[in-house]
Length: 292
Image (tube, rainbow, N blue to C red; front, top):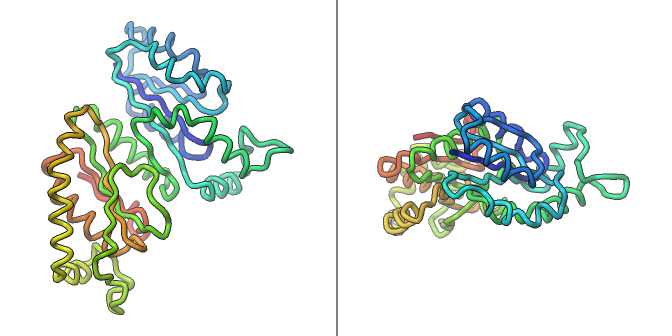
């Protein structure tokens, strides 16, 4: 039996994730009281529910004491249940903007608790679930369509038994991706930004690729990162890890990191059919993504 537990801060995309799983044939329940999880799973496990799997959303609307004992509840589940815990989050500024645009009320806000404080407090309340998560997705720069695509790629695709590897470029000036497992800093490479003809292009453009391919340091760095991944990705896979995010960062996330993430994706996509590619800072193409 397949079980997906969805959690995360309000405004991070939990409803979108649940709707996507419903479209994939899962039996979905929103705002499930955490204490009911063992009984629900037991019933589903007995074959009472005819569906591809069970997906439940557990969030901060639960009693705080129930969330504190979340790990105990997980221990009550049948041992042969294939479980994924998906935790969605976003930068505080992104969450505040989303609530401001929709004019929705945050479930923890009140006359005495402003929105910013409620958003910060919610992360503390959900820490027991966040720490148990098998997959964390930062939705700060994602559209609804990109999040739905990420759910398909990383949760539905993972049923094949292969490890799902996401190669993601990013810019350090906007901070580390919260869902990164391995981070490689490529700011040591010559920066195409200082070449006037390349400044407005990205690491996917042939001119930028040609510039970096001429740099011996770029080839050395790529080879060493590839050698590292050659050694360690199989070990992550053999330890029953279902997902791993390889983040490649440069200053702005436009040239060097994009170039190397693309190159790594092409290098490993045949060995790992569940491999995917995302450029966090590129907004000029749909999602800045490429898929296997």
